[in-house]
Length: 113
Length: 116
Image (cartoon, rainbow over all chains, first blue to last red; front, side, top):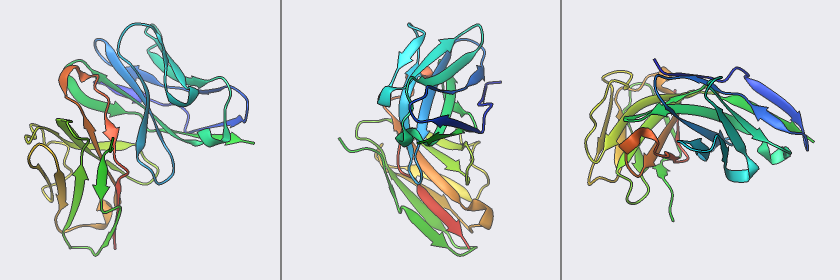
């Protein structure tokens, strides 16, 4: 069965420091991997996705994620955090011919000034 | 262009009443999805549409929940005889197609439902 794990409920980072939000997955076959962000009282916004090709994917707002097949991970990163990055981040996975996204539980990112 | 819109943004109802939640997908998107998000939790998949057809309704929590889509566009999620455990944010998303599994889903702002 497909699954996604976000091992950290919350990540605290000082403004200006690099940030990482972790995601590991379990699927049979090749995964499609997504990151979404949710600001308070808002819907989810798409950040980036990995389908195929280059393992380093660049997305919105300066975020990037690296697909690591051997470690079955897709960690979200940003070189320099902003206070405005504080939000809830969700990782999701799907497979070819499977429409359904399987979602992680979310990680709350707090950037302190 | 316009994104996914949902109405109402907030709904307060009394236990036992019926509610209807509406979703307008991005124009041209053939696939539409409904999710439920309880406070501080992840997303629970409810149902998806390809065109007007909903091939898999197994994600609906009970037979009090139903959904339809007309004209390949607007969708309505109906909850009959609401219960307090139905209180949540109901999110709608759309994507261009379902093909391949890698389609990006674009989300609306959600409807926050509170059942008293």
